[in-house]
Image (cartoon, rainbow, N blue to C red; front, side, top):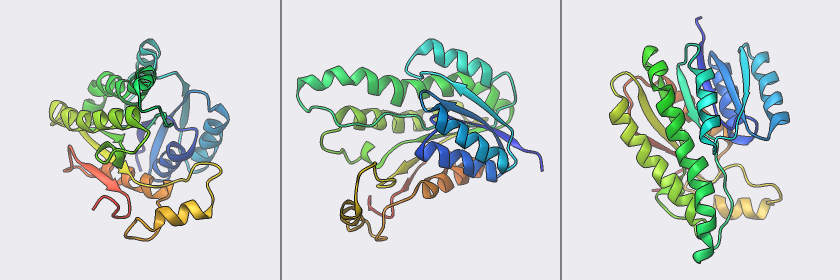
Length: 237
């Protein structure tokens, strides 16, 4: 089997790690990006190599344009089949004028970085009839109280997904995965999980593996373009 090559941003922890490992198991070699989570990225790399993948690790602060450009220069130096734009920040912000201080951080990483990576890798992907999968969020459409800049950036990423699907076709497909409640934050107990599960028709919260499976599916779905796949157990119905 000829292995393809994928880039996964934010691959050192949680969802990014699960996506990378699913791709490795599915026949992809990997570029694993991390910013500060070197230990997690090393663990991801070890597991991916154990699944048969060739792995390169790349460190960069994707909120810095020059670092994004340097990173992408490395990516396009070799054949590239898939870009998974996963890196993001997520934390509550004030709802008054003080929230403005946080906007730049959210827009730069959760939106602008993915625009730049996709744009700079477009030609390399086109040579392989490759694809891009952006990790969006159900709160792009259903805002979460106390997280205004985050929700706005994710809404922008959903719009970017559809715009790039038009701009990059027919040689590059662009889709998004929109996770619902999954991967409880550290310290959240069983009561929180039960409360969230009660709001989901399937009766449970999602897992990182649920999201990763959707990414793997879209990566190989040759006639799907410009779509946002909600992986939320039916919560967005």
